[in-house]
Length: 192
Length: 239
Image (cartoon, chains in turn cyan, yellow):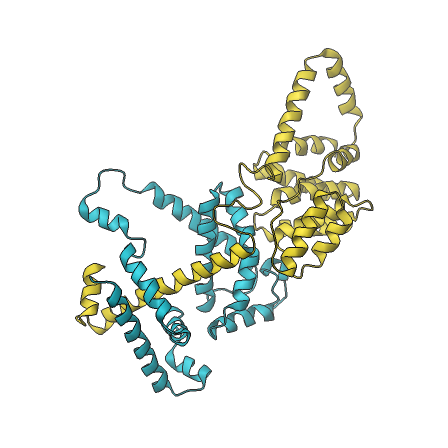
């Protein structure tokens, strides 16, 4: 593959492959360094080309980085013109954001609708999110890394076990323990 | 969600629904943690949510806006002056006798593209960039170019200001500057594209590459942005 760092956030093809491999190993440092550095480019683009407000452009850029990272981990992004792909994603996200804001209900809300409005896009309300933040922060780094790799990044336990050079059954048990721990912390703070 | 969480707490969900709830919980936890962590990292680099970056619609440091405002003011002055027959006559004579290279010289030396805003940098790259912006603002274009060239993977904005610095330097390097502008245009990222088209055209005129300049000026007209559109038309008449 031809190296073209200018179109690929300063990365050569091999560095891009390394960036993805690092993410799969749970090492976020290179990804974070690259995207923090190019954050302002994308934000400026949204403000200039889409006349987005500074705060909105910031939020959309952050969400785009999260979505881009997910696609990268899933192997859905190829080296080529990452910068173009990324800015296009950001623009699409901004258009979705505008579309969603247009459709916000303005009429008087029913109680059920008010509950729904209080929740964010994920469906969780503020109390649930506060409890989740707190219970997540109580988990050790090892647990967080394992749950993130398996549940968020979708890596098979077998692959994680190979990377850690451990038996798959151990990893499975550890994952269950971590999940139980999170659940128990969460319901200590949140009573449905 | 409340009902679902209650069932999850009481282990009343089947395996698939349990996994679904756990996935949603983990997704939320992970993404919220990422947002928080990255926001802190950005803050340490001087990027804050409520602070506009280099380019905002109201920022006086906005190079595009400021240049556009100055262009508007110039147009107003020209409008008033044009009401006087004598001035109109002089202006007409001036237009007739001015060549594309004269126009390029005026565009290059009468006014420099505004410097980007300066923020505090915490790492070496950010420090180099902050120093480069100060040097550019002070008209120390050679120094600005050297500082930006030292940044290992420059952003589009940094590449753009490197090209400008090379172009405005006491000994301009139009070849290198035009290559940088061209590469920004080819990236199609939308960042500094129109500006790069404009300055690429100026460099090409200085290098005698009128055909390439024409193509770039036509791209500005096709782009539909008002910035430099009138000037591009004037240049095209001369080329």
